[in-house]
Image (cartoon, rainbow, N blue to C red; front, side):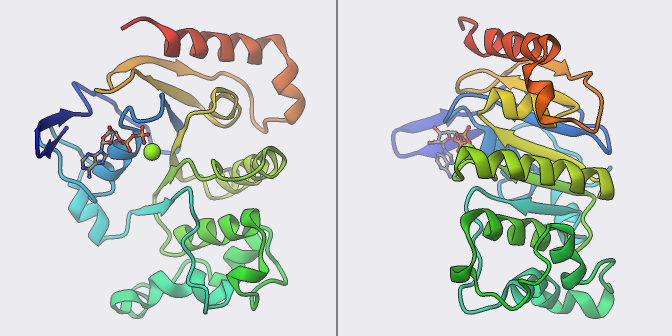
Length: 245
Ligand SMILES: Nc1ncnc2c1ncn2[C@@H]1O[C@H](COP(=O)(O)OP(=O)(O)O)[C@@H](O)[C@H]1O
Ligand SMILES: [Mg+2]
């Protein structure tokens, strides 16, 4: 994947071959600016690759987008400030009359409960903390019942304590809904803690440095972060990230 800039082409992704298994929790780990968000945007059909091919559940990314196979969560929750939490979650159902043709598998209220926001249905974004807003964004991403959840550093703007808590919540939700998750992060520990598999990317133009299966059992527990197995994974990933080009 290359971007055309005024002074030439910017090569961002090079020779990436990656298969993500259904139901996996895959983290893309790489230095800032290497092309992680670009890779997610290609999967989500926000960008079209200049070379190569992407298949989402056997279809093209644009077909996948039309069928709302994908849900997205970004670093910023991007909620509409004048709508309640519940109305923000329901918003994708209203766009294009989607809910008339596809009755939602879970109601917005049930999804708010799933993300731990019971009792906050009527709250506006300004009345919610950053972590709570991000929970609303996760519920919104799930409302069209997507098969795949794309998450681009969803907890990157949160403090460490809130981030740890939302990691727990995300794993609980993932265990319940069992969707495929593609999760972008530049935190090594977060990648190990959450994932079944971690893909280490090189600096731009991103190439795959290593793919590491994380054979730690679920449910994952915070105390696992202090075990030698966990540390072996973080050390291996750190080494893969730091390898000379
Ligand atoms: N739409 C765009 N047009 C031109 N360059 C872009 C565009 N989007 C991203 N880039 C460039 O591509 C590179 C990778 O960006 P990005 O995928 O956002 O990195 P990451 O998410 O890994 O931090 C950066 O150098 C960025 O400036
Ligand atoms: Mg990014």
